[in-house]
Length: 305
View 1 (cartoon, rainbow, N blue to C red):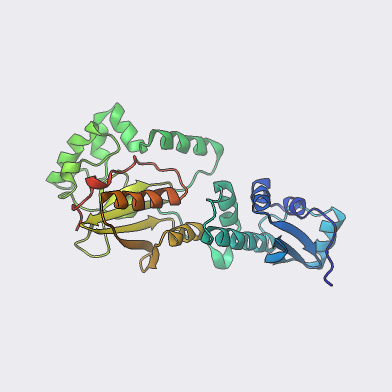
View 2 (cartoon, helix red, strand yellow):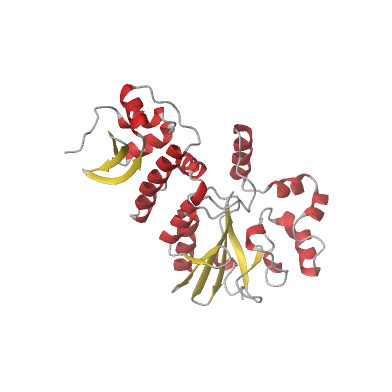
C-alpha cells in the first residue's frame, strides 16, 4: 500500500510557492492534495486526477515543515502543468470560468516546452498601477485613443484609419457621434485591417481570404473577436494572444485551430435572435472584460463578404 504522509497538502503547496488564490480554487473543486514519497497527488473523490513528481529530499522537507518557495524551478513548472491539467479538464466538463489570478499564475510558470505565445494586443499589466489603469479603461469601455479624441478632436489624426481613403476620412469625422464605435455608414467601404489590430466595435477587419470582410465585435486585453453575418451563416474568428487557457475556452465554444495563429467557427442560425445568442455566448465565454461596447447583431448583418 502506498505511503501517504499526514500533512496539509494545500498548505504544503503554499510553502512551495503556489499562491493561496490557486489552492483556494483547487479546494473549491474538491481537490485533495496528498504528499507521497517523491510525488504530490491531486485527488478528487478518491481518484487521482493529476500527479507531480518531486525529489525525495523535497518530500522530507515538506513533511518536516522546512520546505520553501521553489521560485521558477522545474518543480514549480511541474506543479503548474498538473494544475493546468485540472483546469483544462474542468473547462472541458463545462465548469465555471477559472479566476484570472489562477490562470495568470499557471501561464507564468508553464515555461520551456509549454511557452505561451507572445502578446499581440498590448502587454498585460505588470504592476498594480497598470492594473488599475486598465480597469479604468475597461469600465468606460473606451480605448485610450478614443478618450483622447473626446478631449481633443484633433487626436482623430492619430486613429488607425487616418489618411487611408475617403471612406475612412469620413469615418474620422463621424467618430464623435458614437465614441468607441466605428461609423456604420463606413463599414462596407473602408479598408480592412488585421483583426488583431482593431480597436473599435464594428471596425472592418480582414478574414482568411483577400476579399473577406469581417467586423470586430469584441476586444479584450488579449484577444479580439470578429464576425461576419450573411443570411443564415454566422462566422466568428479570434486573433491575439491565444494562450493555452484561451484556446481551451474557445474550443469549448466550438472554435477550431487554424493555420496562421487564429481560431474560427461557422454556425448556421435561424434568425437574428439565435445569432445574437451565439455572439453573446462567445463574448461571455471568453471570461475576460470587454474593452468595446456590446454589439448589436443587426448592425453587421449582410455587411460582410
